[in-house]
Length: 101
Image (cartoon, rainbow, N blue to C red; front, side, top):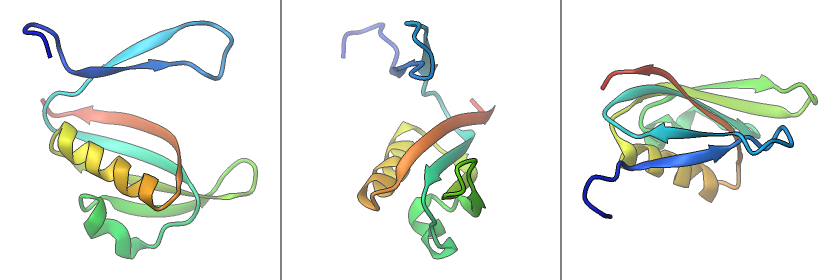
């Protein structure tokens, strides 16, 4: 990475036909809400950075799961998302609820 460039990710809005995008900064600790398609047992909380796990029903009637909790840094967020990927759960949304950095 070149000196002076910040780490982050560009997120494109796929729900509209526009090319609008948002640049997310990965700074210090923050509280996240992550929504996935599928049911996830609360026993997975330890593997998912201790995030609270709540099972819900989505608008389409399918089972969804919402994870909520504090993530220390980009590496921990990446680990959570990778674990969800390994479980073959589609990630619906990742939100920063409160920035602690």
